[in-house]
Length: 311
Ligand SMILES: Nc1ncnc2c1ncn2[C@@H]1O[C@H](COP(=O)(O)OP(=O)(O)OP(=O)(O)O)[C@@H](O)[C@H]1O
Image (cartoon, rainbow, N blue to C red; front, top):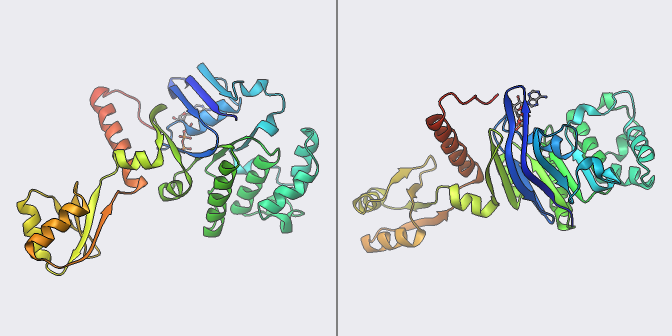
């Protein structure tokens, strides 16, 4: 089983610390969502893992080896970094065949990945005529070509239509289910929540969280109870009298912060108020993510007023 290991990984570009003392392991058999605001250092981290950039200090290894020391890199690691990278004048098939030959991979992989990524019908078209979504699929096909143990996908859903987004979700889940190590960066929180078992969150190059998706939402999300009642005025008064914070949502339901459905149900029963709907709401990944990154930005501003701002 192959994992990605980052130990005190640091990358500086002329005064900018893009990655700052990052230590974490990205394990096999699960999809790890890679999150962070623009400029947090996600792409730089992926480039360091792939040996496309040299760390200023620290190490990034795959299965214990730096990328440059891997004997068969494409069979070990597949990556989607920049979907525009393929040669525009080549056909999709020729692009993949070139990679198969130059990396001594089995020729059958070309048709297999074209089929898998839904590009078989356009395989003989020049890449220059491809839509952003088709290029994205070709980038994923390229990442899958060596049937690698480890996949790094930078914004794989970029430019894909809803059907394509569901396809990526199913694909990364399957790859992780086969025991592979899958690291996926994304700006779409709901999307990430739908496929990631685990999260690594960066802020200004530093590790903010390395935790399961469920624990992340529990830790940073805002737990609340959603309730719809036949007598909102009375229930609201009863809840306020007991010190609860109550807010009316757009959809006519009430949201009660920091409470459980059992507690609110008991209050309603005691008051003889009819309850039409009552449910615990753990909060979303998006909400938890903003709570964490906002708290971090405020902490950084308070402790280091001259800290460089995000790009
Ligand atoms: N080649 C480079 N030269 C100089 N600065 C760079 C270079 N590459 C990245 N940076 C800087 O490093 C920081 C991290 O950038 P990076 O692209 O890794 O962030 P990111 O988390 O991938 O952002 P995004 O979500 O926007 O893709 C930014 O401040 C960026 O401007």
